[in-house]
Amino acid sequence: MNNYPAQTNFVKKTKLDLGYLYNNNNEIDRAIAILKEVYEDYKGSTESKEALKTLQGIYTEQGNVDDFFAWVESKGVSVSISIQDSANYYVAENSYMENDFEKSIKSFGHYIERFPTGYFINNAHYYKADCEYKQKKYVEALLDYQFIIDHPVSEYSEKSLKRVSYINYDIFKDYNAAKRAFVKLQAFSESKENVMRSVIGIMKCDWNTESFDSVLVSAQNVLELPNLDAEVEKEAKMYIVKVNMQNKDWEKAIPLLEELSSYTGTAEGSEAMYDLAYIQYEQQNYDSAEALAYAVIQQEPSYEYWVVKSFILSSDIFVKMDKLHQAKATLSSIIDNYDGDEELVNEAKKKLKNVEELLSKMNKLKKGPEMVIDFGSDNSLFIDNGDEVDDEFMEEIEEEEE
Image 1 (tube, rainbow, N blue to C red):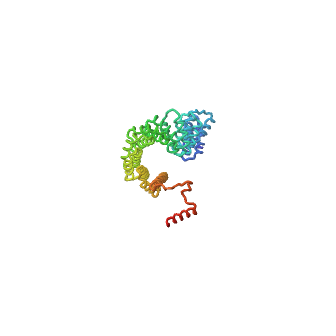
Image 2 (spheres, rainbow, N blue to C red):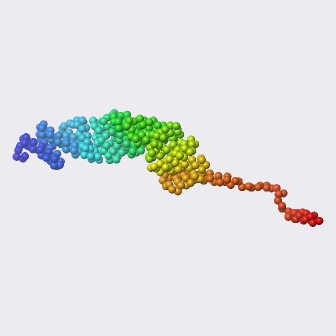
Image 3 (cartoon, rainbow, N blue to C red):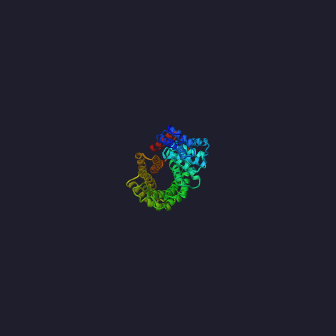
């Protein structure tokens, strides 16, 4: 190039091509230097414009777009806010596309700080949140997702609500916050899958927050969903049953329990049959209660927790039927042989103590009370003057001899 005048087309094109070559070979500093030279030496030319465009691309890829604009403005060229907005956003987006999440978080954060009302502000918050979510930075992710949720509905609203509901429900166990997200997701969702997810999520949040009156409503809403999964259907029915059992509303509980008890060989089926036995016990139908409890115990496959619960219930039934020795034997067997749920073992011990007290009282009644005679202070009932007795006795003997 030194053999040709600087202003010839050949030199312009050669310098530009050389800039491209350096860039492709990752010789970034050399590429920037020669492209800046093309821009400054051949202003107004096609090569100058191409050099500037390439420079912007290089700075963008390097994440130094602000340095690029500072250099351009130092050359007397004003750059509109919209161009700076776009360029800064694309810096962050490039990092995101390369799965460089740490760099993306930093770049999107920089964009949000510089352009809080920027054209890509929703995009920036959403993709920043996505990076934070993938990095398990859930607190930070919630803040960015919340920005999307708090603003008018956008293409990111539904996705953000889905993530917020998941983070609050599954990660933080914040069921009140999760329910708020599920309610919004149900309202905004255009996806049948997300509507179903929200309705089911609301029910689970109600249950976990012990909002039992609400459970009756939300569980019924779940049962009205089309194409409902069988397991979710069972879960909704179990929640309704549990609330009715808690309220001692046997009339409403029994039909669902009878339906659920037909799921033989399942934990839900065993629990339902146990509940039916318990209702019969509460209604003083002890023979029916005993038969149902025995059915749980004999069920195959059996579920140890409900088998033990049924044995404990059987002991209560035996007490009501005055079969205290059977009750004692049943409870003793649980204590000696079961090492599972500690609460059940403690319950069995407490009931055994009560049964033993009843047996003790019964045994005392069978023996009868001990007879104790209280003579009080009447000394006339006792012989306490030996001499007088002897004299009288002797006189009687003498009279008989005469």
